[in-house]
Image (tube, rainbow, N blue to C red; front, side, top):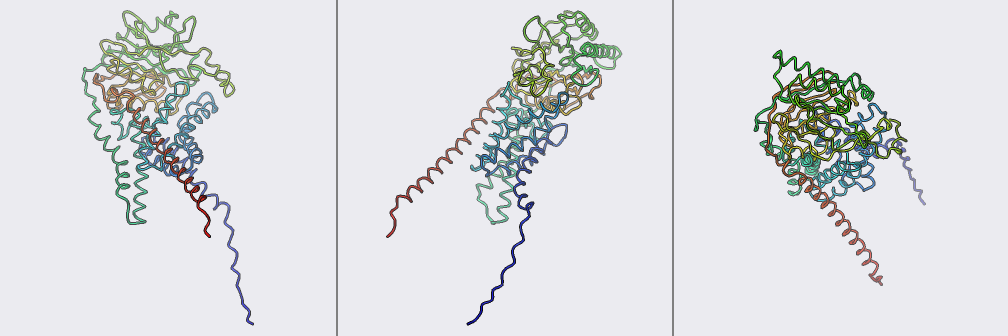
Length: 543
C-alpha cells in the first residue's frame, strides 16, 4: 500500500478593499470629469475644443449602462458641469440658491443622460445621442418658470470652428453638431481599437464613425459663406455708455441716483470728447439696463438728469429704467429718449428673471434664503417685440437675460432690426464669470442672425460685436467708459432666422424616434425571451 503525498497550495493573498473599490469609482470619476471639461470649454477660457473630449468621455461613461446607473452617472456629470458654471448665482445671496439651481439643472442633464444611455445600443448611436442632448436643452430652455437656457452647449462656442452653423440652424443645430462630433470621436476610437485587436472592422461601422466626426466639421465649413459682416444698409455710429456703479453687490440698488448720475456724466463727457474731435458724433447712444432705477416719468430730478445728458450728446438715446406704476407690477423698461422731444417710445422686458425680478413660490423660497424679500414688488413681463427707430436705424432690443432665449432675439430681427442692442446689468454678480458667459451669447447671436450686436453694461464688460461674432471693442469691468464705433447694418435674414424653431423641431423628432426605436427593440427582445421560455416549458420530457 502506497501513501499519496499531497501538497496544499498556499492561500491566495486577500484582495485589498481599495483594489476592489477602484473599478467601481472609475465611471463616477469619469462622469464628474466629463462635466468639468464641459464647464472648462465655456468663456472666459478660450478652450472651446474641450467640449469634444468632454462628450467623448461622457459617451464612454453612459454607453451600455442600465437606466438607473445612467441616471446617477448623468447627475454626477451634470453637477460637474453646472456647479462651477453657475457659481456666480450665489455671488451675493450665498450658496443655497446656487446649489439649488445647479442641482435642478443637473437633474435635467441626468434625465437626458438616461436617454443617451438608452439609444447608445442603436446603430449609429452618436446621431441619436446628440439629438437626445439637444432635446434636453430644449426642455431646460422652457421649464420650469419659462426655462433657464444657461449652459446650452452652443453658448460655449463663441470662438469655435463650429460657430458658422449658428447661421444655418441656430443654437440647436450648433449644439447638436458639437455634441455629435464629441460622441463621434469616441466611436472612432472604439473602431480603431477594435481593428487593432481583431484586424477587421465592419465597413458600415467605420463609415458611421467617420461620418459622425467629419459631417459636423464639413457642415461648419460649408456654412462659412453665411457669415457676412458687410454693411448692406450702410453703417451707423453707435455709442455704448458704461457709467459704472458705486460699489459691488446688491446694495448698489440703494444708490440709484448715483448710478443714474454716473451714466449721465459719462454721456456728457462723451459730448465733450465729440466737440474736441476725439471721437465721432454718434448717430445713437445706448445706456444699459438699470441705468436709471428712478422712474423718470415720476421723478422730476431723474428726468432732468437724463434730458440734460441726451441734449448734450444730441442723439436719440436708449435709457434702461425701472417704471413704478401706482398699481400692478414694476416694469423693466427701455425708453427711447429724443434730444428734442424727450421719451417717445418704450419696450418692456418680456423674459423676466424668476427669483430675481419676480419671486415664484415666495414662501417656499424663503425657507432656503431670506434674500427673497429683497424682491418686495415683482416685475411683470412686457407683451410686444422691441424695435426702436433711432435716427433711421432700426435697433432690435434684447434686455440682458433675454439674450439666452432664442425666440426673444429672433423676434427683433424678424421685426426689422438692422442691428441688436443687449442692454445689461451685471453689477449684482461682481467680477464673476457671468458677464463673460453672457457676452459669448451675444457673439453667437451676432452670427446666428447676421447682425452687429452692441452690449452696454452698467459695470462691464460692455462690447461692440460684428456680425461675424468678432469683438472689436470692449471695456474693463467696473470702469466708467464709452465705446464709439461705426457698425455695419444688415437686413438679410440668415437661414437660422428664417427657419425659426424648425431645426430644433426636427432634432426633437429625431430624438423621439431614437427613443421610440429603443423601446420597440426592448419590447421585441422581451417577447422573444418569453417565447423561448414558453416553448421550453411546453416541450414534453424525453423518455
